Length: 386
Image 1 (tube, rainbow, N blue to C red):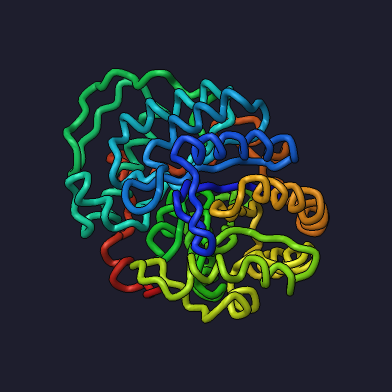
Image 2: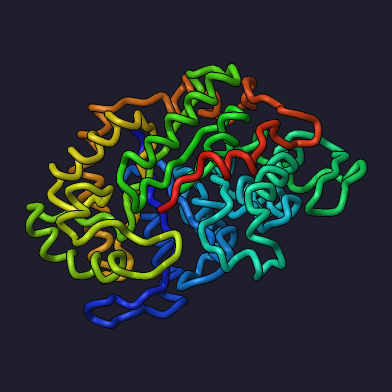
């Protein structure tokens, strides 16, 4: 298995102590965490994107550029790029620039985001979120793979023999993953194109995410894609990973913070079904416990999901020194055991993107860059509520 550190850059007070760092300090912590993650042998570092709420991740490309400047090996990812609200031309330009700065280390995870306030901010309708995502993704793919693109769609002006976006990516189009959290639509889009899927595995019980994963794999096979190129990433629960010598000690130390941040809050689309830290650790995706407990939980999810990439997030309201200690313990005490028990070809020689060649098996559903599946129908018939 490969390992990712994800930061969607929440900027929150510690709910127990009331302490909060400045915006500048919080952003610099992100860059330092990425640098340290590379030193500790993590495979990738990902940044989220939010344009509303208590987050300061509205400009992930800027922060990724800073990370590219202080790292040399670790892959740079997003989690997610909210493509539904963005202009694909600008996305192509900005992320190709990151790809060049990092010398081909970029991989993008796209999605429609789960913050409903982002859509009116950009003058868009929430009702169009899935159609926006599908159309814009089709255009983004073409912009990174073709010169002088002619294209038309519903949500932006047409392009006629458009000037090639610059810069071009470092070595062919970066790999694009699809983030999936609550409905089958993103899973279906990923499967249609033969792309990898990243399941949020954040708040809901594992059975809900298994529904999305199973649908992805069924659709992937139905569309005739090579199963050797099918990769799956998984998140690790809201609130952040926390490791202590014993699981009981981890719950005692981190429980009050975790519960205040995730349980009993009225956050549409992000409400936890768990009663307390004990319930979340026992039945949810939270990686809170001893190293052995965390290893067992990741492997239990792997037995159900078969995922290749495990993402973790640090508890960013805790003192930064403590966050780095948790990061180091995870790297030294968890990663080796999970890697040995759950091997993967992701980013290895057998991976078609291991050295970033073009993915020869990628499908092209149609010339307009749209998917033949009826996304509105998927949303009506297959969505499940939080």
